[in-house]
Every structure is written in C-alpha cells, then in structure tokens.
Length: 129
Image (cartoon, rainbow, N blue to C red):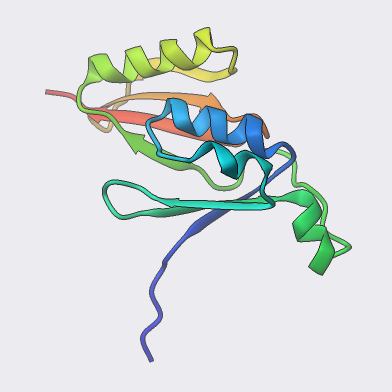
C-alpha cells in the first residue's frame, strides 16, 4: 500500500475573502472560484491547498463546528529575510491581523505569522544568512 500526503485543506466562512488573502501570498486562484463551495490550487513547488466553504462541509457533516484557535498552519517560504518583512507588511497594510511580527528565530530563520480571514495562522519564513 502506498499512502502519500496530498493536500492541506481549510474550512472557510467566506470564500472570496479567503482567496483574496491567499492571492496576496502569490497563489494563482481564478476569480470565478470566489463563488464556489470548493477551491484548490497546486503551488509552484507542488503543494496542493484547498478551501471548503462551511456550508458545503455541513452538507455532509451536519455536526461540524468551526474550530477555534489554530491547529494547523501552512508556512510560506520567502526568498530572503527582507521578503518576510515585506510580505508581512503587505498583508498588514491590506487589513489582515499580524499574529507575530517578523523576528529572527533561534532556529536560523526570519519568521512572521499572520492570520487569514478565518483566524488560521499562516507562517512566513526565510533562512538567515
């Protein structure tokens, strides 16, 4: 048997607002997906991400409730420490919440965390020189 991880999926309340956030991170998501109950993309480096509208999820799992807090995060690799700062600043200027401003982490990376529209923490990082 061969079982491979294939996709990270999120449940969202507002598809258009969520996809707008991820477009600012450079993902190609056609505008017609804003009106869909399911959206997905394959990132340039081969990861598959998906977003499922809460109404669609409740159609097959009526007991589903949106979790609170962040249990899983997706980390976006930036080209440089300066790009971590720039992407963080762009997202904050666009109205998204910073969870943690950029800092030099003890594990050798420039790191920052922002919240998507549903409160999921999204990590930004680049290796320090």
